[in-house]
Image 1 (cartoon, rainbow, N blue to C red):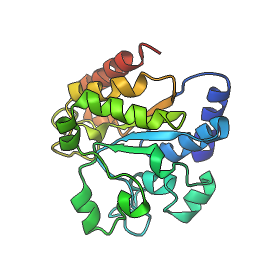
Image 2 (cartoon, rainbow, N blue to C red):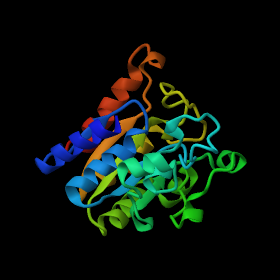
Image 3 (cartoon, helix red, strand yellow):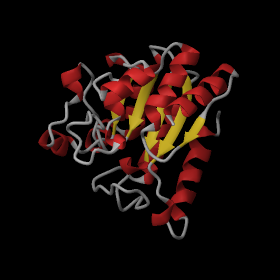
Image 4 (cartoon, rainbow, N blue to C red):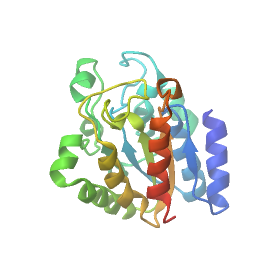
Amino acid sequence: MTDVVRRHVHQLLTAGHLPLVIGGCCTLVPAVLAGARDALGGTGLAYLDGHLDLYDGRTSPTGEPADMPISVVTGHGPVDWVDLVGGPLVTPDRLQLLGPRDRAEAIEYGSVLPEQLGYRPESTPDDLQKQGITEAGAAAREALARGGPYWVHLDVDVLDQRAFPATDYLMPDGLRLAELRELMRPLTASDALAGVSVGCYNATKDPDGSCATALVDLFADVLRPR
């Protein structure tokens, strides 16, 4: 999967396109960033997710690779995956973790934390709301764009479980759909945007298609200017 996604992202970017990658889960993130680096020489990352995803293969409570993409792109581990993509893929000034709310659980399971690797700590939903959702998105955009191209990845579990139940890892205290739209609008409104990806939508938990419709509406809105 990593090799295929990496190659296609590279091809799309070198042809002048803006990739939109729709995947199963966040394991596609190291692949898209490797493809973007191959085409552009490196990118930043705005990572909108309910989890830090810094487990390394030994500390993960599930052993699932979806626990690990930020660990891979920061070069922390697992080592074979890091080596496969030629990591690390993002430097400390080029990563924005927006929406995680699993810090206590991550500490319990022994995960490394962003600041322990020299990266900026996450902005929780409470942090984003206190700053102002739109203002937080604009601040993240400006911080990333200063360094060149950047990628935006959305894991739908950044949303509150009541707002978006069609995902495997249901979590309370997340963003509402309107807040996610406010956050993404400034992030996608930059010439520095290299690409966008979305993962962790589970169609089997969306029998009436309402969550799929909400996602389509979201991307139609935030990508329309593109």
